[in-house]
Image (cartoon, rainbow, N blue to C red; front, side, top):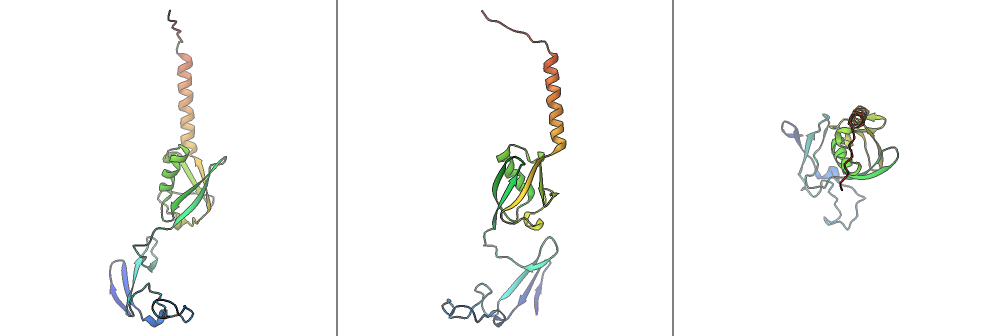
Length: 168
């Protein structure tokens, strides 16, 4: 039975009997009558929310800590283990990697499951799990630009007359 409907939230009433389990231990604090609703009373409410993907799901507890996952980032010749929240974005992962690798976030390309991922893609929405591998590449366009600038600087240095100053 639907009790309230808000823009993105629906509250449903439920009966405590729906969540009873006979396999719960008799030593639980409520005398062996398990309550899967997290300590709510018998006529409690389940809150629902609509996720960015459009899926209707049970609302999470606001007090729970964010799940932290370990992501192994490979640069081809080395790798780094990075701890990051599962709901963070690839852009936030790039910022963390910039401290480790020295590459600015705009110079990085992150590949997961053979696809380049956008900065706004969330790790959990793409399917990144604990101990998954992400490939870090330097952006080829920016790499070429750096190389051209280095060549131009080297050409200017080679063309300028070198003068030696000897101090007596």
